[in-house]
Image (cartoon, rainbow, N blue to C red; front, side, top):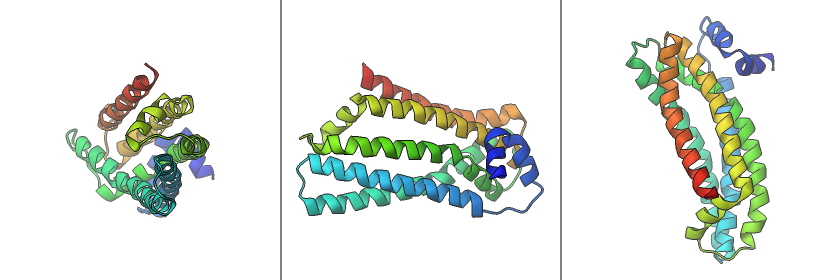
Amino acid sequence: MSEIINVLTNPDSFFKRRMTERIQFKVPALIVILNALMGAISGYIMTKAILSSAAVGGGFAGVGAIFGAVGGFLGVLVLWPIYTAVFYGLSALFGGEGSFKRSLEFVGYGYIPMLVNSIFSLYVMNQLSSSLQATAADPTQMAQILSNDPMMQVATLVGIIFQLWSANIWIFGLKNARNLNLRSALISVGLPVGLLIIYSLITYLGGIV
């Protein structure tokens, strides 16, 4: 537990110490898998609610919800190496040195704030699911309904805050894993994460306008 707290409060010190130890994926993989499980549950709940509101038969809604759960689970797992590959590639432009495996390990630790956000998002999805099931609308209308919902808007802003927290961990993780200065690590992580946050803000502002 003390190590997890150290990742959150002093990531630079944590990753410097990890650099003296062998690469291990047990903890970061567990963190990512827990995130994936939260994504699977959220995907199941929301897909079932959306299909039920569209008057899809109960059996089909259940099957669709399972696909939603699988998609939510795999989506989180796939993003882990994708994030790492993007950070790794950008850091190469700054002369980054260090293995992809070490970068993958350190990026996994950055999912800790996302896990907290996933738990909050799951609560929001659960609250919204009952109201969605009582709303008769086709799936194409659901995006507009969700974007206009105050709880979803709050969840978007909270998600951005936790995304920034994860980015802070990734910056120091990449700095140590790829032997970069802070500026280079900041650009390597900040550029892609910044684009994602801008997209989230555009979605959020589109929902409240």
